Image (tube, rainbow, N blue to C red; front, top):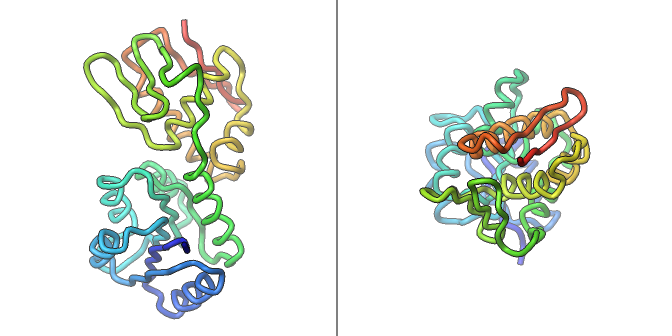
Length: 228
C-alpha cells in the first residue's frame, strides 16, 4: 500500500513538479492549493503525512497545522516555507510540526525528510521496566503514551513520549544533546535542535507539579534528568 501525502502548495507550477516527482517515487499525492480547502481534504483522504506550505490563500499552514493537531496528534506534518525568521521556525514546532524545510529545496531532501518522519512514526516504542514508569508523583503509561498524576491524564504525542522515555532511561546522567537529537529526530540539524528546545519546555511543563523532578540544561552540552 502506497503512502498517501496531503501536499498543500499555492505555487501551481512548483506544486505540479513536486507532485509528479513524488508520484514517480511511489507516493500517492493529494494536492490542495487553497488553505480553506485543506481540512475538508484532510478528513476525506486521511493522509499518512502532510506537507504544508506556510503562506497560503485564506488560511496559513500554521493555522491548518493547529487544526490538524486538534483531531490527530500522530500524523507527521512538514512545513515548506520561504520564511527565514527563527521565531517562525519555533512557532511551527510549537504547533506540532515534525520538520521544517526552507525554500528553495531539493526533491531529494524533501523525500528523505518524508521518509524519516514516517520511519519515526512507525518505530515501536521501547518498553522500560514494564508498561508503567513511576516518576515522582506521576505514572507514565508507556504503551498508552499517557502521563497520570492522580487527578488528571495527559496524552503525549509520539515524540513527547520518546523524549520522556529517553530522559528516564538516562536519568541522573549527562545526556549529550546530539545523541538525543539523533535518537528522536534522526539528525542534529539546526531545525531539529530548535524543535528539541520546544519539546524540553513541554516536558518540563508537564512535570512542573513535582519539584523533585528536574531537567537541568548544560548549555552547549546537553541535559540531566534528575529524579530525587
